[in-house]
Length: 235
Image 1 (cartoon, rainbow, N blue to C red):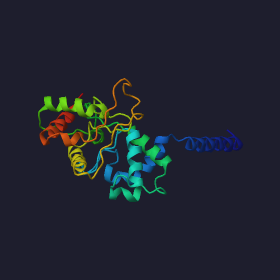
Image 2: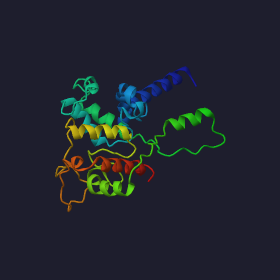
Image 3: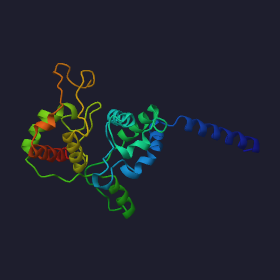
Image 4: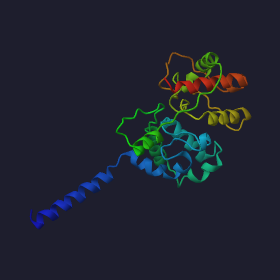
């Protein structure tokens, strides 16, 4: 190949590389935006400090967008999030990108099956992606009944959420307990179901306002529901 052809080939490669960067998928920009968040929420969105910071991996994109905008507008008070959710730091386009990135991360909830040929590094990397929430003790029959009656309409029968209502399955139990305590103290408002927000639902079913659900439940009921949720990750 002549020198002129080599130069032409190099130019084509440079052009194609530049084009590839310009066509980077949204999740790539979302990964970059997520960078500062990893310090608390983990490199894979798995959460941190055993649930002090929640799992974000696999969470519903609509819920992440909704929550980040609530932080930004100060409708939901979360002081550690203030510096990261200013309009200049996190515009709508960035919120959408990081939400899509996190929603696309799938963390298995079952131990991986290793091959004899897998070395220690391969096993370690595989284990880093596993998120298994410890089982909580409780009356599972009561927890299942209450969950289906009071929670499933918004959070899904499988606990994986609907539209902007969050996934609960696979979330750290102590984080859920902390949020429930905040709801009961009035420190965090419990969102209601609006008529136009759940397109996935059966339109023939009456829209229910779920404000005050937690106030109607006993401490044991809540324990039973959380115990049931920890079993959903196995299904």
